[in-house]
Amino acid sequence: MPQSHLSKALAKLKTSSANDPSGKPLDALESLFEYSRSYQGSFGGFIQELVQTAFWESQSYPSNPYPRLCIELADLIDSYNHSLGHPEPAYHSRKHFQDVCLSLTTLLDQPIKSVQKSDFHDLWEISGEEAWVLLFCAIAHDFGHDGSTNKTPFELEKSSIEKTRTFLSQSGAVPSLIQGLQAQIEPIILATDPSFLGSLLAKFNAPSAKPTKTDCLCMLMVESDLLASALPIRGKMLGKLLGQEWHSSNPKAAVTVASDQGRLKFLEYIRFVSPHAIMLNMEDIRNHTIKQLKD
Image 1 (cartoon, rainbow, N blue to C red):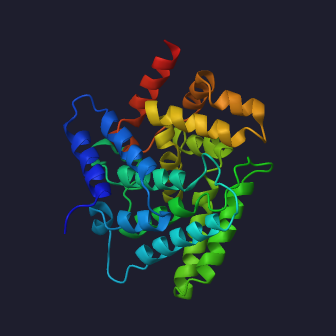
Image 2 (image 1 turned 180 degrees about the horizontal axis):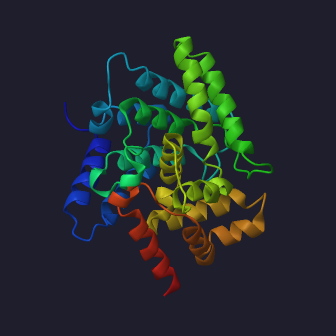
């Protein structure tokens, strides 16, 4: 069976990461997200193609319920967005959902043993089922996003969780799976509230830091949410899209987020701390982009 275009893009990135002496496979990363931008099919079709790539096939196990759940949730999001009667938000569209799913796939596919901190033991070792839970969360994390910002903590994230819980309750999956998954997705999706990043980072960077497995899963989800925005080309374009999204509701913030100064502030606020992101050299990429903006 011939490789899909998505499989080829992911394979190119993996080869580039292994062979690029600079440790910054920027061209391959930018190309991967360019593929997402130019993809013409539905979100459900994209996820169906993604779960058939080499990495996700390597995470499969007997009676794995997640490929079906992931595809059906993506199909539901397609139907939901088509029913809106108005365009999707400029930034928080299904293109963003695709970017996050690609970022997650890329991060989880990194060989991390050489850069793991011994004091964190095996917390960053992600099992096949945990990987699928993260992909499900990547699909769900902005379900129903209306382009606004949170007026109260976790407002939009809670709305996405409720929509996803309704989907699960109607999915026909076994009750024990539904109950377990509903509990697992809540902290992971809540962590994507941008105002929570400082608290999450403190769980890894504080002198007495003792992160849990859930903290690690949350961090991988947040890094997946931020990764494309940290790239020099893709990130600048995404800043402009976020500016378009906020144009009506918060025009002052819209101008800032689309500017170089706004981008600099964003890049100085975020961090990449997982060994997966370290292997992908995302901190080097972030710092290099900051230097370029300051020069």
